[in-house]
Image (cartoon, rainbow, N blue to C red):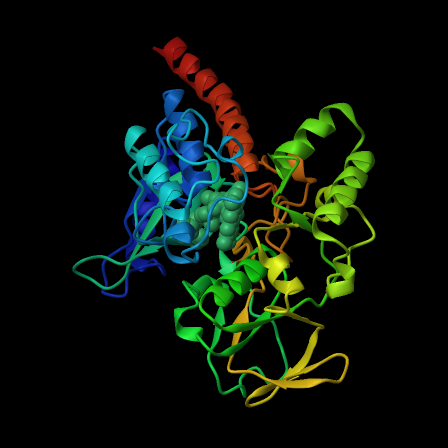
Length: 423
Ligand SMILES: Cc1cc2nc3c(=O)[nH]c(=O)nc-3n(C[C@H](O)[C@H](O)[C@H](O)COP(=O)(O)OP(=O)(O)OC[C@H]3O[C@@H](n4cnc5c(N)ncnc54)[C@H](O)[C@@H]3O)c2cc1C
């Protein structure tokens, strides 16, 4: 190993990684695990490891923790699931928080969490490359940061454990729709949508019928806009609460006693009773039940917080798929054409892992998600881990964080005892 470091030192002068301003790239050896991303996943894993006496280094591309929740969410957002299903390990939500905390409350909780566990990520540090180096037996992680004095600095970290916590929602998905560039009105992704303030009196086409799409439509109604919701595919829309309980909580309880298919049937009967026939209003249901579909494809049912009532009264119109856009209008698959003032893309997000992690055993290059089935995707080879890629939101994050910290602890303790034996 010593030889390896000497060789690296020798190569520094001719290093292709040399900074733009001529200085060599600093190389830093990280004693504990290196975590990429300071969202809920990165913070939860760092906290679990810290509790076991293992220090981590967190690199975060934004200038703050939980950048998704700070910058890419709309004002009216609340947690979709009750708080007991969303808390991170080792720290419950404050008891005065409502059942469904607001975005701001969730952020306050995360800041408190980072402070309590004294987690201090390196901000403005984007990981652009990470690769396992067989020769030295370390992960080599290249991060580009914005320094105060120089515009761009590159640092190379060496670590034994690499924890990917960059999220399922790292980059927005912008679909290829013919004529999108021609459209003359504003076109924004939901990640830039804050409120419907700018859309009052306007006819807005909302493309995408997931939780964000339906909630943005509801928000647009509050600002007197006229939203049109594009539902290209079938979708399960379920009431947010049933029988006085959260739909998620009720499903969890039923699953303890009943098979999944039967629980799906119960959810669909209750939904029909509460909402009516959604297909009649353009939102047809998939053939598989909501829980079965979630398990098989990760597709989350839409939890209705009032949008469906507006669809019933005609305040929100449901449209079929869009075939093309033109300067002011959209053409739909049924051949109809309508004018619009703005387009909002509620077309979701994707993982960015393939853009920086040079590895293809654990993560699929196609979608940047772990290849193994959902509950086993957290562990790869050579000390590589993934947290927050289970399509189970914050509940999945906590489960991964615990498992990863326990796994690393085993090796850590074995290493420590070896060091003691040597002494
Ligand atoms: C609008 C919206 C509402 C949601 N509501 C809920 C909800 O109510 N309940 C729920 O359970 N889940 C919800 N989710 C899902 C939510 O994304 C996750 O539960 C949670 O944010 C996952 O945390 P994470 O840390 O894995 O990912 P993120 O929160 O996305 O954090 C990943 C971090 O990694 C950083 N990063 C990315 N790439 C790099 C890089 N190359 N180098 C350095 N840093 C990098 C990012 O800047 C980010 O800060 C919602 C998602 C959205 C978009």
